[in-house]
Length: 441
Image (tube, rainbow, N blue to C red; front, side, top):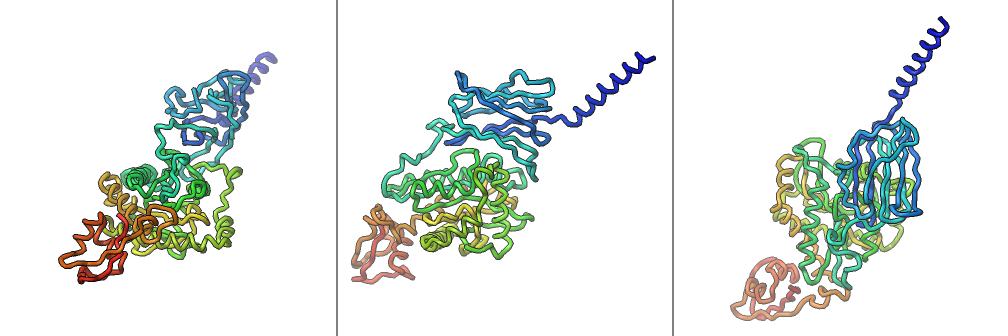
């Protein structure tokens, strides 16, 4: 009888252990690799908050990062994971330290100072463990113009495609991700700018990965950009609103609903994008207050407003405008004290008609060209010293009999609109002997 009791108690104990383990066990449901030009991020999606430890083995190749997930099962095929990073040779399993654990090994191409941290669940994602690997992650052929390729005193435009990686941005009714649409528009804008002999473009995000909000204006400052333009697609809680708008920095919180939504959406981006707030503290408003003390901030904000006005004037010809004047909001991406900046909302992706338009390559190209033309118009009027815009600023022409604006525009390789703007003309009528300033082509 005692023997049977002992066996029974043993079975009960084993059952309790198994049930308790089953209740506590975690799962690795997905693994995602996001290579960026200067780092790679690996994200483990888990059912619960991760219980983990890690160590590196750098004594000999292959260099390895080893992560132990305690009381965790692997439910994803590691061989099916997309990996285009130059820093990771392979992601595989290894013998775990006990039967209830999972050991993941990242075989690395370099000895890397890794950063591993958990991220709590939010409205869009569950619990995550993030691994950041600093270093060149993408092949050079996949990068557009790099910082070291920028030429002296061409007007330099830093182009920021919003969101990316784990942060999809707004999602349209048919499932279109904002991050994909705005990257296409940003690349189209960069292509147009780089065909202009007086200008050059630098893409802050070149692929599907996330860049921290505070890092974006810093990158524009590092390359001494003349302008930072951030490309986005708007969204609202209902599908009715539509139209494009352009936003500039305000020293105060926005005083309208769209502005507040935009500010809240921006703050959510760092949460979704997985910025390690212990490393890059989200000090948006603290930084903004400090930046506004700098006298240069006033110039940057004023120039940004003037450029936004020019861009809106051009966008009117190709898109419905939600707002016909620059709007103000306190946005982290616009907080450079040295670089004028604007944020272009290309339309409401939450509106079914505009979602379809934003998917169209033709409309993307039209938006990109209108943004380019607005930027160019500004720099033609106010050229930075030492640039081609300054060198070829204008020439004087005395109107002769039979000449018209269209004749002069063709002769000087410019536009009627540019000549009228340069000379503050309200009509197309010219008179003999009239002196005109001809803008650079």
